[in-house]
Length: 198
Length: 349
Image (cartoon, rainbow over all chains, first blue to last red; front, side):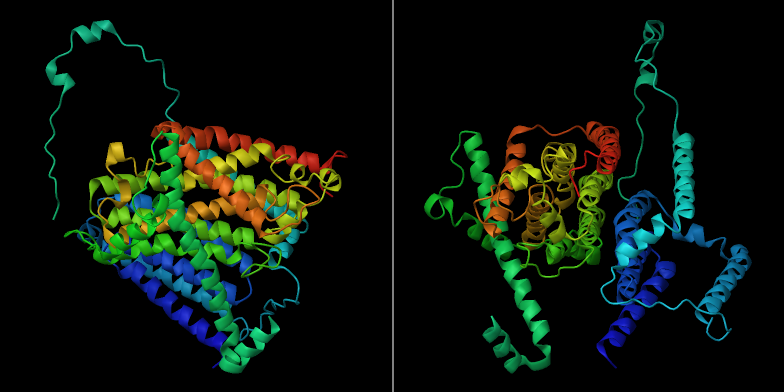
């Protein structure tokens, strides 16, 4: 077994383990951390396949930005794992159908050799930079799909802003009449908050 | 050099390339750690002088052994793990913070031949690796099970993600004008131009044509480092010490090392991308690593100067600066540079 095969199986083992932990971990933060590990390992496998641009891109985009925000949200959630597990059996049929579909699709892609689909042969001539060729293709042959994708992203961005925008803040004018008729009860509200949760 | 190579081949045989790479890594990391140690001393001295104090002056002549003493002290202190913390993550977080700070140095060129890994996409690699550094901060804040630490981690996460955008855009301008993602190429391209032909190559470095981007990069670099005036993640007057409040001994020291190693990294990157790296500022002096070190020292001095001068940003002002000032500036300058490059007045060809 040469070193490349060894590295591949090593990374794959980590990837499979991390992916399993994502769906089995009880603590959502641990699950998110294993998802980060899975992305990172995935980047490693892609680098092994000489797709260095994709490898760096997944770490830059998913590990460096998306998962940071994801973790940010997950850490602030107060998730009760038992309450989530309650609906397990009612969601199982739909989940099983989706899972089977995904397994079938993956099988078709990976097993294309057996189904006589002409698989794309990745031939990398020496001295050609992967990053450069992706850039060249993206802005020449595939410029319209690329622009379309960026348009879709822009629409998504605007939609997110529209959904969360609450209108401009009016001036900080205070009504003296309201101020005069205010009670102590309206001003201060004492909340009882448990400090520590078991 | 050849004799050394043959000697190594003779002793280690087939694994010699791996051993040689390890030796090179040590040759980069050891001076880096020494630099980190003395950067802390420099910081205390410089800020001391700016505040009309003397700074550390008891351990060794002019306090020169102070960083060693501090290091030993931290090494021998107990690492206290809070009772209700998430222990595994609590211990992993400092490692996650220092590992990217060191790994990024793999592609930093010191001269056009002195570089550990001269890869094509080195700029992308740097951006990817440095973006991982935020996990150390977030996880330490979460794992400590402390409100102050958690607040610090939340602030830091939002801040780093916001400033990474401005930073990325300023780097996009650099790679547009240099037509390459390779850091060695980016430096070499700055040696060309009208001013360089006249022997005034410091005027053809990227800082002049990309001046707004240079400023944006420097300020977002300071923000990425969580340095004053952007140190809301620590904010000792508001949240005591932020994300590393529960850490002691060597675990704390790792955060400290990571911060200073990152400072040196950002200084090196600023020098390489905007200040011409190892190129000499005038034609009649030879290029060399000395120039890179001098430029890095200058940028590091700026960081120390900022810390001694500016009061801390309020959190909403900091977000406003990142999103409403830097991102629009970057977008406008991106278009300006693009049009400039395609116009007859282009200076890059």
